[in-house]
Length: 209
Image (cartoon, rainbow, N blue to C red):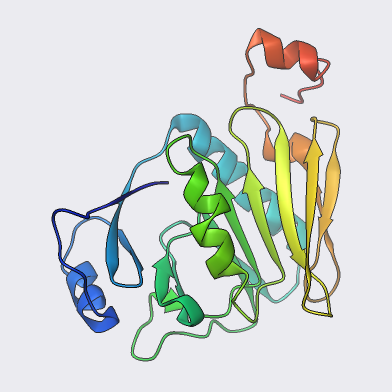
């Protein structure tokens, strides 16, 4: 999803004021330390990749007590006074809601963002700093739209975060999860994505339609 700060349109807000404001709006808004951020639609490719990833995660989870949600679910990051709408949120067990809400959770295990040209710097910067402060989070995955490439930040028991980059339609990568790692396949995540000729040559025409 695209995001655009409303610097010149709205004054800084408290968290309570933001929640009241957001409840009254037709469209979604994120929040970061007083700043209101408007959400707008993504590309068709963004939507296909997001749905592919959601389907892939659900298939991998099987009967585990975990749930994959749509971009409509809001996540609260208390340590950074932020509210975000990740492209995909995965939580295990019962959702832990922000007090008084049923639309905002605080216990994600995995968060996914599909990168967009105008907002990649936010995904790599503000959101990375925010998401890695969530105590329950085990992994943050960034998915490229331009080429078959995944970037994974995964937490270890020591609390340290490790960065992993994998690319190519034949690539696979593990992400940590309660009950055992999930084995992500780029071929599944990019299923039915059509690449330009340069990418086809670079990746060996290995796309699985």
